[in-house]
Length: 340
Image 1 (tube, one colour):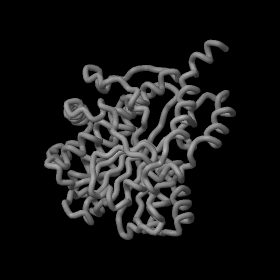
Image 2: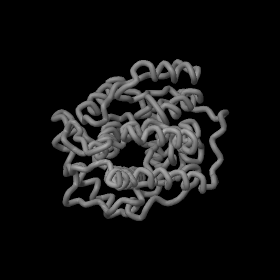
Image 3: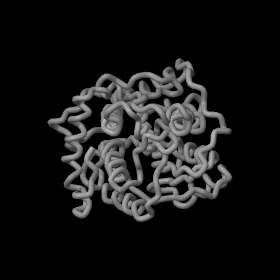
Image 4: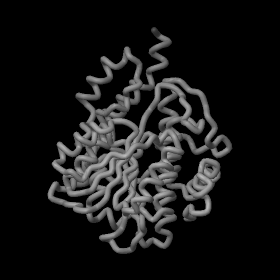
């Protein structure tokens, strides 16, 4: 039993830290009123079949957005729920498995054929497996889903003209990246071992989760710099940590922990609806269409970690990931890819 306690003490520490973090944070940003509308804007939300992503999809649909729910599962029930709860019929479900880059490209191909501009893109999908698993292309699963898939999505959306940079505030697209405060505990990116699959068990899962979120935060800041090189905002790229959310992210926790973990999450973690507030703020608040490179922790603005904001690391991450993804890019796409 002592061995088991050592193996899973990381989970207990993470839950405790998350609860303390949430209860100690004072809100300094006012939530976006329900009266604020985004009528006609096209909003893509990944991982929106459940939890935080579903709450975001409902809120955006209520405000008049045309919501595209990009999900691996939950078809069509999740979409039906979002339509019913939001009272909007402007909701579609799109099939994608973010752990498979071929599936990501197929989604992008489908959206390209439709040719409709994306006004708001919410990169929300996330997971934390019990132990190391490989993606379809052989990468560690969180590295693939949290970082590589998002890198491909945004690069394709830009290259295909679905995200169209604009200096006009009313036409300026927004990219909202759901990250985590866990990125602060990650070590600097090891570019010598970049993309290399490593075995790990549950006790080290949080370490690799944090590493994947650091890559995501670093990428978001580099993307913001590249899209807005002279300080004039053309695409608002902003990042947030929603805090601890009572969602399905703990679905792979050990069976013996679930009777304790789930009641704690229900009692002390934020509901998906409440946790969605900072996401909606970045999506809908007028002032956030004029800013880029912002990081929110809950409803409070603060800088991301120094590692995430490091420009040299951002540039190196961009090049390393571009080289890594080149071999997974369909041949007919290689010449068309955008170069930022």
